[in-house]
Length: 462
Image (cartoon, rainbow, N blue to C red; front, side, top):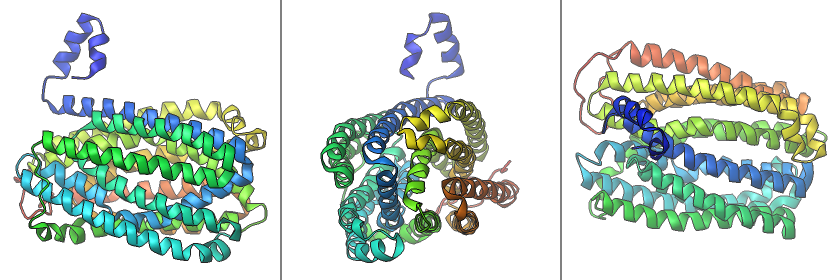
């Protein structure tokens, strides 16, 4: 049960117990959402605090340079991770009860592939850093920081492969604890790194925090697998490699349409006069888009494995109820939070430094974009849980093209233009994703929702 219930009056406890009976779908969703909310909120609070400290110490231009370094790293991150976090979440959730041995093989396969892909991609990033700094982001002096970021890239890839199985186990309380631990590690490292070593210290401190987090995650994953009686055996791993083509590969391609598009949109901005100062404003405002998007992330961590588990059993009506409930809850929370943050946006931007205050309209646009992203993410969860990864890839192709075109057209408007490009892009993405889910899935029999080779029980899709 959710711990906060025990703090309520006895009458309320009784009513909530009737509404949330043990082992029901509602209770699973509420418990997962509660712990995901706690962990993600704590991590986001720490991240925002780190960002404010970093921005005040580095100023607009330095903070813009850090934002561009992280954006460039993100360009390669999708290939380093290979969509393994999402893959393990979906298939561990599906097989953890009916085929524990296969769930264990999938975890070991994804861990090995993540090590290999992370190492290769990080080396490629290292050797390309000089060219990228000189020709792509117009900042030759950032070569050293980009080379350090290759380590951050490697650890980030491992982190995704570690968190995916934990989400598949629905171990949301443990994930919350791990997120909080990494946030606590990051704060003092960031303050010390930026204070003493400025921009290089900012990159090194992030790398150290994520690296230590990977070690803690590894130990936690092994302990949780033993608790769930999931054998992490090495034999017959080749049997699971087809999952990389059926699920991971289209997931990578889907990400490859978004991360590079964001990076290209950023380069349009930084290559203009006063571009890095504008990038600093956008990076600060965009921190709040990321922060507001934490609630969709919370629901995604909860709903994706639950949807995969439910659809794997053929219970399509329950899956649809869960998806619509997530959209409704998500939309209400994002609307209230977005309006509240928007009203205080001038004050919030001033906390980054007096030169950032002028960027409050940029923050408002970022908050609108976050609201749109929140609804899209819940529709995307249903696509992922239905193993419709190739159609999901096509929707992201449209998003990438829309962002590049709109960012190019609005690049003369600085940070405000880039934020507006995100709003236009996500609105368009919402339209065509809704159309696909409605016409491509809900109005047709879901058929074989799992690519595991087993068909679910037949039933109506609406």
